[in-house]
Length: 536
Ligand code: CFM
Ligand code: HCA
View 1: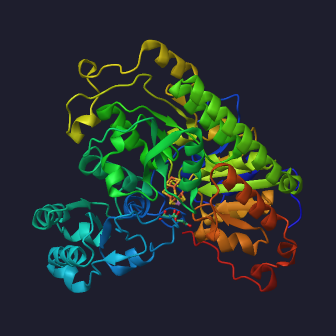
View 2 (view 1 turned 180 degrees about the horizontal axis):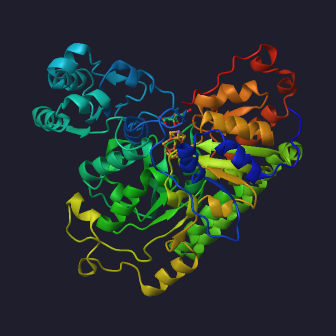
View 3 (view 1 turned 90 degrees about the vertical axis):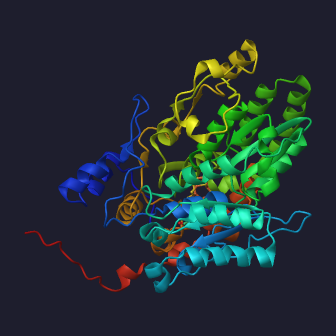
């Protein structure tokens, strides 16, 4: 594909919309926005995909077991359902882990009740009980999680009661998640269910005093080793990561995570519920951060310095920034020379399509179209958050957290002037979404379909498209390199300073590889059968 001529984004949007019958067109139009920074723009998001449209989205079970709970390394995670649900999620996300000293480590296993027709007809509770018992007998894990897939909800197996019974019988925690795939409209419902279960049953169980500056990293899943690079940087600054939710997480670390002073939220979409519940019950403030990109990482570290407000720590952070930035920029410079001015499109779940724009900017590249699969409106538009920090004195009841907090029961934890400083630094008062960071004329598109992606590629001819496995090979058939921003195509880390260098090297190798110009898509070589919709 040759370089794209200047294209009118509004015209491309009209072309996309014209794909659909009138009713669907009306719906899809609300999911596509041409950026106009002079306006406070809105976008439709987090609604059902129109049946028949080929979406990139996954299901509730993927969001709960696959994303939030599965990465905990020393629990056994049992999938109650047909074997396919387990098999297709087996190690494909590339969330990395390491065994702790106690040796409990089950990340590479795939546990399933392997439901059959008989179980659908006569019920699967007996089989689930047996599976939990067998897993316990063989592995003696510290805790077990149980995840329901679609048929379990349809036939009505009571996994909560089974979990309670087995917990009593075995003397370990067995936590059940009703994350049947069909719940909600995407992975997003699964994140919420996982957050609630984790908070209700595990977080906050062990009070262990810790010294020094302590944080948790929320919404960081250690894909390709990202969490380890973040930990390395924070440790250099003198800040200890107590727990990561949930990349390479251990059960014990999660139980004492509430002892941290601050929660850093990397992927807000998948874990905002946890951040808010921990703030309400334990008085732990949280801030949205981004460790993707050189400049973004430095900005995040400076936010931390403002929060802890200790001149010594600030000095150390500034020194780390100076050293790490200089080294990363030195290594990125040769790649940047070859990448400057190139264009990218980003279509990933619920946070990376925003975060990676910072990293592409470090490489001199521009993101011309971006969208999330399942994010909510606040991830696109930004949102006001409560400008005070509160402690819930005695509530252990999760249901209470869903009602408006009663001011009598909360008290400000920090002195007024610290709060004012936090507000001024924009830390707890307001967070930005993807749209305000995108330039005029760029396109934001929610829950993109294959057909829409094809039009965008044909019209804009981007230098690289970043998305997932469902469309990777379609993109490559266009002669355009495709980088999977989910599992990093067997590579990583991409977070932090060293990750940015890895990313730069690989993006240069992909974009400036002459092989792409030799590709002739199959549909140009052999005629394609064309069908016309039948209208009555
Ligand atoms: Fe958060 Fe994620 Fe993402 Fe996500 Fe995902 Fe993922 Fe993703 Mo795939 S938690 S929203 S549900 S950053 S698995 S590690 S890559 S879609 S952009
Ligand atoms: C999921 C996991 C996924 C899928 C990636 C993809 C991941 O949503 O079930 O579609 O390529 O990151 O592994 O998002």
